[in-house]
Length: 449
Image (cartoon, rainbow, N blue to C red; front, side, top):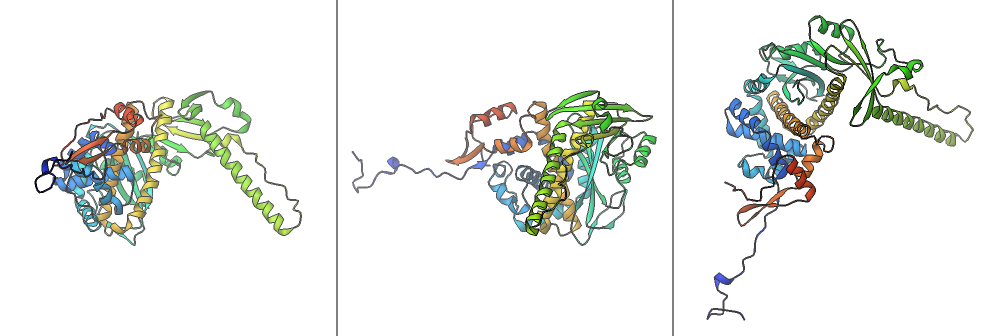
């Protein structure tokens, strides 16, 4: 039976209202990152003394971690995330971003104060560095107390300082000219902090010349240096291969065989990583197969038999999977191997820097904009290490990678229903991960004020 008014209209109070569902927004991953980095946001506020600028840097850095996209997509990512509700009214349109980067770069002294304050809790530092290609005609970056203003060529060297602990975090970065020796750049970076702290340098084969390492030893500076495989300190060869390695350790990829010898002022530790061994062996054999396939193709095109012997797949097994480390630190072998592994993470990061720089090039039209770009990437790197260190503390790093965690938690979404944000409960796997990270799925809604 239908109840109507005398005018045959359905009364207002009985009319069924159609619910308007707004598009869902990402919630889980961004909320998790914010939950472990509130101190970073607070320090940005304190150092910059500008809430909107500090929040813009913080939000852009989070979005770079979640998507690693160019600035072209930052505005859309912001509006499609619940960050726009918890930190509202930020402007990331294309015209604004260039101005924003320049404004950040103009606050160079405040940037340095932010990085210096973070480092105050550290007594031990790890340095690393790499080249990035700016691809500009010239960049004139402002100097600090240690270096005057000067014209910067397209190739820039980025020196990074890390907290030397079981849960390392990036502390400070410094851009220098590509023709500045690594050692000078590293020592000037340390000097810029005006602190007397223990210094440990981790460096790759490009830096690990005998003269450089002897200089560090003479000045009582600790180091972990990777040597070339053909270094004359390494006595490994095919004839002594079976007896050379006297012990082994276990990494998450498999066994790593170890040989250690003590020199006058340093230790030489030679690892043979079996996962790396088989990876390099497969790459070598694939290269040989490709070469032979090319020879067969040439022979068919010539239509005359070729009596040239095929390339052999034999390889010197004493050269595969070898990682040679020279060091002056007294840590145990597993810890030293872990320090070496940190460098691999950094190499991947520097590759990412080059890629993002190419994508963001249109926004970097001045030295100040470049400085702002560097700082946002620095904050993103801090946030990434916060995630990794949280996984370490929870003993989840063997099961979950950084990208896997952010991808799974991004499945936790919210939609606005009747003016309130409501969680779309994800699958059990995502809920289990959220609970392990002490990031409870709270069912109550939150206001958009």
